[in-house]
Image (cartoon, rainbow, N blue to C red; front, top):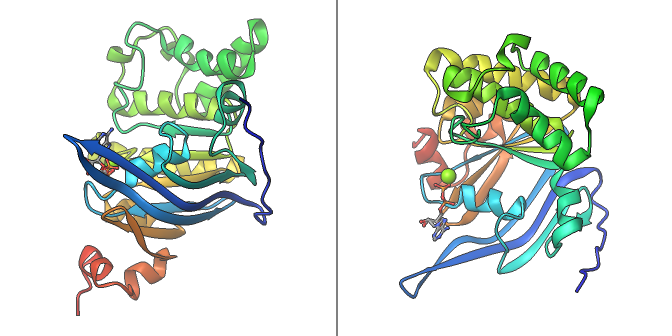
Length: 262
Ligand code: ADP
Ligand code: MG
């Protein structure tokens, strides 16, 4: 069965979620990890998603990336309804949205050189080979602040920050519109975190990327995000500009989270 792809006029918004719901059952007890979430992410911004551990942030991102099937609701990417896409058509939209993982070592194949790791999405998702591939890998590695001599190395020979740069190069290789950053710096040394965040900001400007940034680190979200959504028990309870979330949070939960309880 091929799902028909409907379109929605989303005014240039990269992501539109309508009523997205995801349940898990554990020992026959249903957990609603994501509950009726409506969410809009305009183009070229960083949308920060915050909320305590277990509030459903990662599950929401995995629904959006189509790594989970949703139980209810719709997912639109650049106006296209991707909620029920399968196989070939899903592969095509996967190019447009990529994930940067929290653990940069776990995200890379330990038996692949950095060159092969960066080449993989270019070949798999874009069909690039030979000399064009060689040139693209070099450009990608340069863009994330690594050097040609890193290409022959293996992940365990690189620092955490260098591995995360490789992860970012892989994510950006297929020229996505949306990049999901799930705790992208929380596994890194504090001294390296700012460098990675600055790199992400530079790449966003240069490539007009849209980021969905998931983090429990309020300093990170405040530094990076234009708009912030707050999740609580699977629900998106408040969305506002980053400034407003920190200076005039409306929900009691948000006030507690950002530490402005009157
Ligand atoms: P967060 O990223 O905000 O910490 P998660 O999205 O990881 O939260 O988890 C939300 C809820 O869904 C939690 O109760 C978690 O235990 C549950 N959950 C997440 N993934 C799974 C899964 N694959 N199977 C069963 N339960 C899950
Ligand atoms: Mg998570």
